[in-house]
Length: 299
Image (tube, rainbow, N blue to C red; front, side):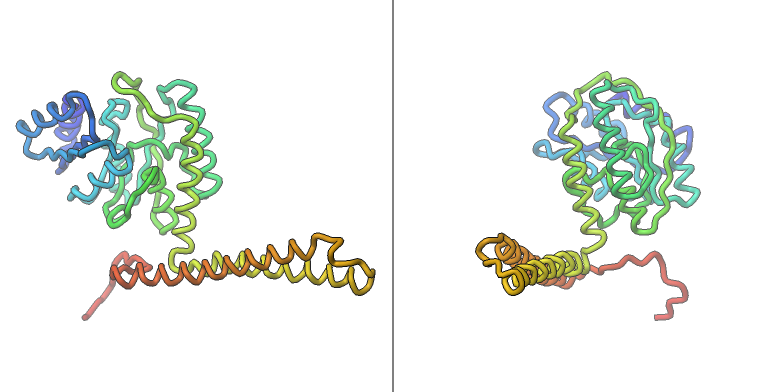
């Protein structure tokens, strides 16, 4: 922690920007907390969030965002692979009006077995989301506060903030950042990360597109399933009436019944989801929209 703090202070002194530094101790079992307490005694601008146990990177980032106060937020890992010298490049893009600036570890200093699953995951994210970010997994990013404020992060969803910002109309940029060899700690990511990325991305896609109208998602597939069941049942009747083929000799009635039941259940699920969505928005006073600003508000 001390080397990272030293590099951060050096960069902020060179840029002369107002800043705050927030460290999150995610249940570390080493001497990290002692080092952080030493830093806080020396520098009152430093804040430390100490978790009772390990909750993961996304939760740590969410907590840091909640306790931050700046208009721009730049998270980074504490393993010294991210280079604080890249912070001015990120802030330069933020000053140009971008909502999110994502770091791209183009010359990544990791083993092939870490880089390969990352490349696969990033390719999947680009294909599903349509947002052309090369390195969604790079923690070193810059966010405008309005992009992340009020956004609850779960699972591995911190890596999808650029996607979320782009879908919401924000401007997203990417800059090449320096990536250094890991000298401390050990990575916990592997090939299982690919499946987590796909599942989290599907959740985000669903929430973004259907959070205020889930009946459109479930109802669409429910109606299609019922339509298919009607067609299959009509074919079985055709066989019975015109070809004198017993209904018991074809599986079509059973398949039609299955599609009808599935379709009916999907529509009911959509109705229940609508009720839950309206309860969510109304009880918590949440809106299904976000306002950037109001011009000439005379109220």
